[in-house]
Image 1 (tube, rainbow, N blue to C red):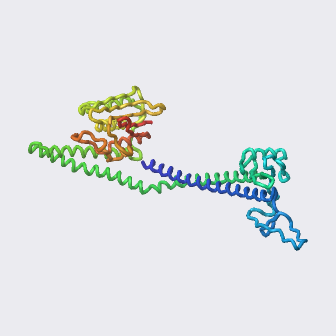
Image 2 (tube, rainbow, N blue to C red):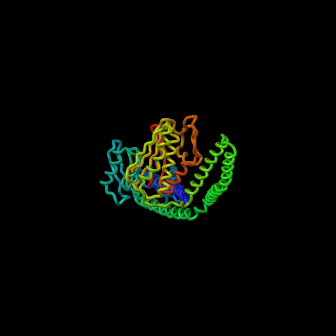
Image 3 (cartoon, rainbow, N blue to C red):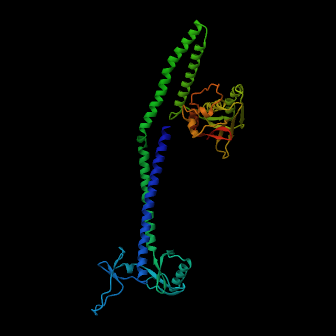
Length: 430
């Protein structure tokens, strides 16, 4: 159980870390891609606003279309507009590779400008322009080029910018961030594994104290129970047995049974339970363990059917498997409806890798809510699993906990479900 708890702690911590790392890496790359595309769009807007070319750069942060001629002092100077693009500098127009396609109001291409790019010819530029005009899009990506359209007095202008360098930078950034994230994730997971024992130490200590308490209390309670039992027998020898002495003996029997099951549960939950693993005929074991309950079921007006596939072999502790069958069958007989049916089945799973033990009983009013709670110690849903009002209910609420511990000690799974008026417990033995 301790190792299982440690594994769960490591898995949960690793999953949380993975989610956080994916969010961080995804966020960083998302921001990087958004910013890169925005910078490209800003440059495209500048070119579109200046009719397919870059404006002259003013070191003071001003830009203008043409050098001003101040020969005529009577004419007012040409107004200057602030450069709103922070990445625009004196080298930008020489670093940016682009070409421009012009079209009239009817969508016919009238002119192309490929003087700022070497990889595209005029005919190719026309093909790019037609493709964008036919698509009706105003911006996007076509091959290695990011494009944007704008309106002019004569029609449309489409600017294509070479973004191969930006794409390569984005891809490198993605690979580097993923590599660093993966290395960091592996390192932190190793640290989690190393320090996980220290993290769950308080829980382990509490669990060990609980096991010691159950064991010590079991041995301590045996002595007073033996004395009470002996005194009761003396009373019956001195006087005739009566309802009080019979009640005392019944309660002593119940307490002895409870102690036995508590000690068995504590033993099964130890880190390395003392199980004798060997190959045995599980078909015979299941049939032998379930058969004695046939008479018990008949006395209660119920029918027990045993459907076991012949000749199945299993590697495990035969005694523990027999106990598992007894617990599940007794539980089914106890909680089956009046005049109901109990079915014990053993068969090979569809995958052929497991041997399934299925014990079911009729149940018109199955438990509500989370059925996995039935495997919790001392949990009993008597309101939904009750029988006739006059019938006494035995059991201590830990039988199914012992069954679960047996199955887990064999590295297998047990589950329960309510289906078609039946309560079905299934142990998938690997």
